[in-house]
Length: 263
Image 1 (cartoon, rainbow, N blue to C red):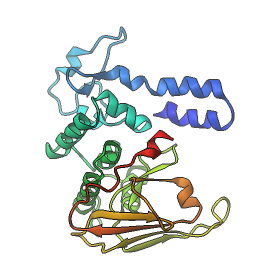
Image 2: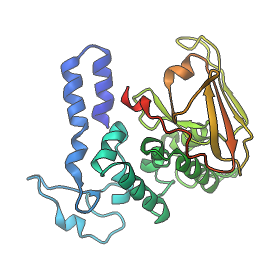
Image 3: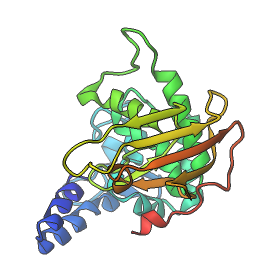
């Protein structure tokens, strides 16, 4: 992921060779995925699998830092479509992601997995993102001195909540893409002033929003229908209005377009 981020800087300053080299390196995660077990695995210096580490029964086995194989299975923020393809496509990916949540493997207080709730946007089931985001918001945050379920490392616990309450999240910092979740406010406005942000505020409106009405029924961006679960940073910077109509039942037809992932 770090290689991906530096690659974006290289591209911005015209260092094409560096950009291409770093992007190739950013895809090295594929060398650590073992389809026979369905997880990322540690390797030895000679390129063979570290069978001793993998056989460990520890919750956090050798080869993984502050997490388990589940923690890092979906931790490919820089290439989510590539990760989905590597794991066998949408259906298999969704089944594994379902197992991650239903099996109790998701730890919201451990920040490496914060983007996991938004990954269904990339695999054709955005209503599950809406559901999981709301669940995480209600289960892990409360208005009290100890109201966070984990340490607020670098402000990440708080940042996740603020983004999610607005209804969007930067799954891949370093890119311009935001994944859409489930807005928690009826109306929220970000006042943008100065620099590149001179065209007006960015406003999110969630009609019929309530705890029960967590599913997006339809959406518009600046009055035009939005049927994919993504927006771009330029949509925010240019002072847009994003309107959601919410409901209590999942609309599985909304958000099926994924054209933003091809650009």
